[in-house]
Image 1 (cartoon, helix red, strand yellow):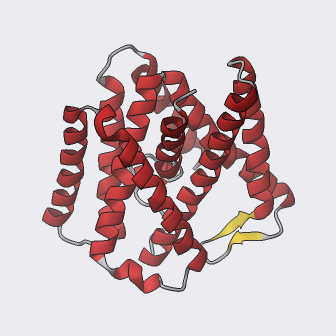
Image 2 (cartoon, one colour; image 1 turned 90 degrees about the vertical axis):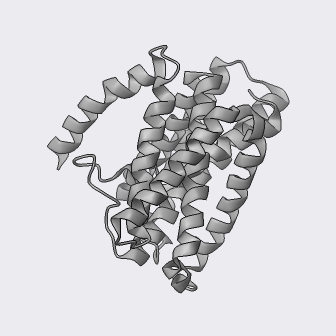
Length: 269
């Protein structure tokens, strides 16, 4: 498993870095779209849609929405889109906290279909818009996500005692959450100092970053909840050793639009 994970990372990392920093304008939006469309296909499995035509039609719908956003220009409706996505995550927080109460709701295909659109379309828009602002802001959000995950893993293994959401993800602990917050705090401080943020600017940057980290944890828990209800361990196996595309972007589905909503509300950093 570890060998597969390392080999997959070594193959994908140069491609991702080229798309992010390579200077070809269309490269990153296309890469992000490819990942999101694979995730859309995996989401149809979580909806337990058995028919290939129905699953393909759903992926085509997601692709059409991405194309529509790209064609109209992301700036036009970006604010309302990311704010709506952020409001969705407030609702998702209630669902995760209540689980397994109301779990039967996740047997309704219509609810899951709409939820998938609210997950995936703002994710693509958030990633692409962050990249357009600066590849480094995109990397910053990814560092927050990875930092929260890495800090939680090591702190959870060393100190984990209290379960964070046992009905949703029994392995996650409150101590792991605190470890993730501590590591991401170091990342936030380093970036704030490098950008010479001070005063209100620094406070807003810290608040938006902190909310983004908490949102990333919620994104992970939310996908775990949906997978648990569907009886699926991994969303797919497209990345050997890493699972599916949805498994790789579960935290980003919340982090990217939430950070961008904060960016939009504060006027940018």
